[in-house]
Structure formats: C-alpha cells, structure tokens
Length: 173
Image (tube, rainbow, N blue to C red):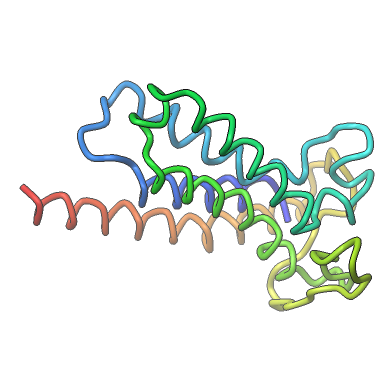
C-alpha cells in the first residue's frame, strides 16, 4: 500500500473525531497529524518500516508505542483537556488502521500482526489493490494506477466522512 491510502484513512478518522469548535486554522494540522499517525508503521527508519516489517507491523509493538504515547499525553493536563479521550482513541485507530489496510493488498505475504507470539499472517487480499514494487517508486503507468485506485477508494471514504460531519454539525446547531 502507498502512503496515499494510509494518509487518507488517517485523515478520515481525523475528520470523524475532530472536536466541535476546533479553530479552522488548526484543522489542517490536526488532519495532517492523523495522516502521519496512520503511516507510522512504514516510517523509513533503521530496524523499522519495511526494513523490519514483522516488528513495525506487530500489534504488540504498535500497541505498546500507543500506550506509551497515551501515558505521555495524559501527563500533560492542558493537552489532555483540549483533546479528550475520544481524539486519543481515534488517533490510535488511525495508527492501527495501517495493519488492517496492509492485509488488503495482494502481495500474498500478509501481515504478521501477532509477532513475536506467532509467525502467522493476516491476509485479506482485495484483488484490485496492488503494492508498489520499489521505494521510491518509479513514475510508471503501474504506479499511477495503484495511486489512482487508492485515491478513488480511500478518497471516497474521506468525502463521506466530511459529508457525515457536515450533517452531524448541522443537526447539533
């Protein structure tokens, strides 16, 4: 999966959890943070990302990182009161969505989400989703097709979330 699908999914969860009355000037930053959270398992760091796929895509490892981040955020009373637990939960879901989304791709390997307890892999391939063969990918028709499919599929989710939010905000006013 490319960063496009992960980022759009993270932004979708951000739209759905954006607190009411959040200043307009901060909304883009908020959604960008959610997009980044959804890409954490693929960050190109040594011993992380695609360098050590079983570690960076492990539910245990990511869960411990999220728990550490939640403890850190909860120690900042001002930040916790501004965000609330709903935002922290949604941010965690954006982060963990990465693992599920990677299982949808047809590379056939699946995702070892239960590492180190099991080497079994979660594979739920959807036929029209493909992975990029190299990073950074060359600009080819295949790359464009993969990105376009993700834009259409995950962009549609984002547009639905924006529409749902507008309907919800209208009902509350």
